[in-house]
Amino acid sequence: MVLERLQKVIAEAGIASRRKAEKMIEEGRVTVDGAIITQLGTKVDTFSNITVDGEPIERESLHTYLFYKPRGVVSTVSDDKGRKTVADYFKDLPYRLYPIGRLDYDTSGLLLMTNDGQLANLLMHPRSEVAKVYVAKINGQLLPEEIGLLKRGVTIDHQKCAPAKVKIIRTDKKKNMQIVQLTIHEGHYHQVKRMFKAVNHQVRKLSRERYSFLTLDSLISGKYRELSHAEVDRLKQVD
Image (cartoon, rainbow, N blue to C red; front, side, top):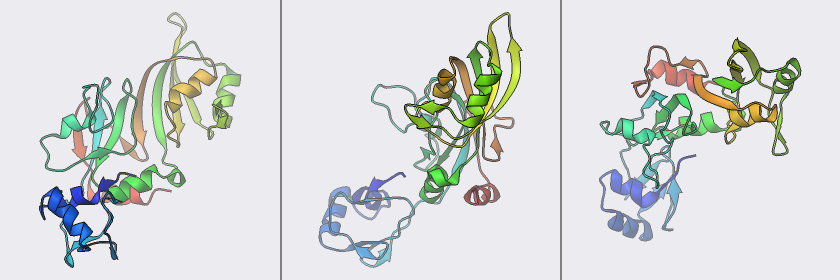
């Protein structure tokens, strides 16, 4: 869930400066989803219904983009180490976009960027079980018993992963490597890399090729396209 301080949301809607917005909150002039808020530091998401002096504030129109994230880019809107972030690719747009989930710094592929808090919360909730398809280049070749472990669900840090779908795309015995397609519906930290590590294989290269029904299509690295209303509606119906 992506949350922002209430006074910041009011200020960015052009109602007042952040300091004046704080005073409005303390004076009981602001409501969130029908409740009067007087506590500074209250956080809200982009789907909250906010009023000031009884008038609803105008929020940004909602937009969601399919982005082909390059390697060497951080899946955050800012980085204290000065590294390039996914937000840097959307600076020309007048919306405050943030990623739905994340991809590792050295992982490329499909990432959704949005300002739709309801959609983000829905897709990131474990109950949604959104299918994510990765293609990994690994050291060595998976043995039948290792494939079986991945399909049944390997254990990472005493936590069992849900069963994965495994498809061998290509094997190169001379280079001692294999390209494997892995389909999962969870999003644990470094999950794909750690799943392969659990069966004794190191990931050399990793890309996310599909998210639910969405694919990269003809996009090239670093480019994006906006999702249609029909695509967003379909995402909101995902199980």
